[in-house]
Length: 569
Picture 1 (cartoon, rainbow, N blue to C red):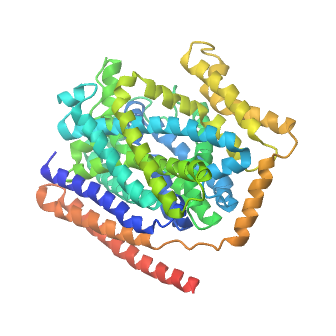
Picture 2 (picture 1 turned 30 degrees about the vertical axis):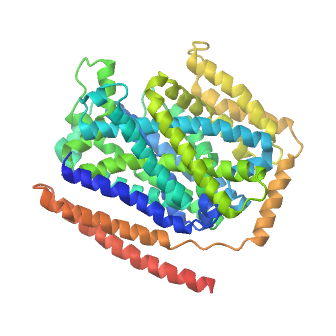
Picture 3 (picture 1 turned 120 degrees about the vertical axis):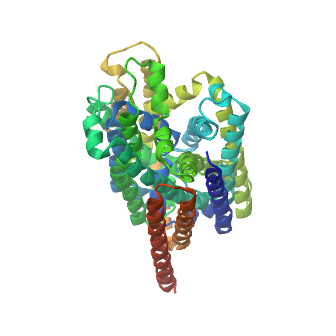
């Protein structure tokens, strides 16, 4: 890495924390801390949800599948877009119209305290461990770029350099999440979206030139590389992937939080539509570099499984490193960090919110809003440190982290389908949770981690993870005719909030921050021109394009701010 790359990376990291500190002034109560006061613009909520789906796996796992198997990796990611559009059409607006301040409040009202504690502790353990694993992966990947793949710190299972990188990265995310709350999470996610796309879009034309253009890519693609499915990722798998992520995007707390932080149900639907639309358009763009890298650096004939894995996992970053000009590699590393930072900050905020609003507040004696905000920040710090410790310990788990992530994948539909479908069906009660989880969880473990039932339909993860829980819920709906007590409680809250709550107006501040950030990115690209003998025209073109967007967005935000001011008079 050149010195200018280090400077760009440092400026980005400092800027991220600065945004969190700046937005801390908006956090005056627990609603601001965990729901952005219901004033998030729908587009910011949608971009944040889009980034929440990203992590190190986006570059390591999906980039690796793209390099090894081809277009099927793009098709798998398109499933997220279909799932998000379905969630937007069916449930996103219903979450906002319900009147709850957190998804955990809905669980408490609809299913009772027992279900609340089950979901809180079960989901928190698995999500925090999974997040720690992602932090470990991205720290190792970035360290490989910073100090070289062959450095002793990267060839060892663990190292002081790796642990320092993990601690620094986690403290940065904890700092802006703890100070700025959900406002900081949403805003930094939006800025990370910008940085990610600037870096990736810059790589694409340079990689295409190296691969001989689209024609050269198509001509040189290995057999089956352009197929939409593969033996491992069949049409049945893709259908199951859509179903699993429909329930995840429609009911997992980090995504539900995005529906609750906007002013109206219509805004909630629009945010999910934006999320879905981006996932129908963008996967081909940000998976194109590893696809092209397969042409530039083919898998050697007779390569061992270990060699193929290593080539796949490093395909993304090596494809970028091969073509990026001086200074842009620092921006690309910032984008890699951004992907995982978005996921970490989302989990930190959602679970600190649950611990504060749904666990601490009922136990405390009428806590003030200041006390709730302080407790929320304390829980954020504790969870952040816990994630860092898990990331440091990940190499010593001997695969336990991957085991837990696999179990979480098995449990997505059994866990979330009862809570989502209970929005529509009044006779679904807490027993639907216990029966669905109680049957699907042991069967999933048995099928995935033992040889029992190997090769049978019952062992198929799509059946146990998607079809079986829905069949169980269908039977419960046919047998249980009595209305669940929680149905009336949720309806009462909805009617109360509808009659008492004045519609919030979206804040114009995020658009102004984005405009300023675009200008900073533009200036950065223009400053890099003298440091590069090649690609100067491209840097200049990108720079002036971003300046134009910045000016247009700033004046648009000024106009919207005036409209909001006039509407509130």
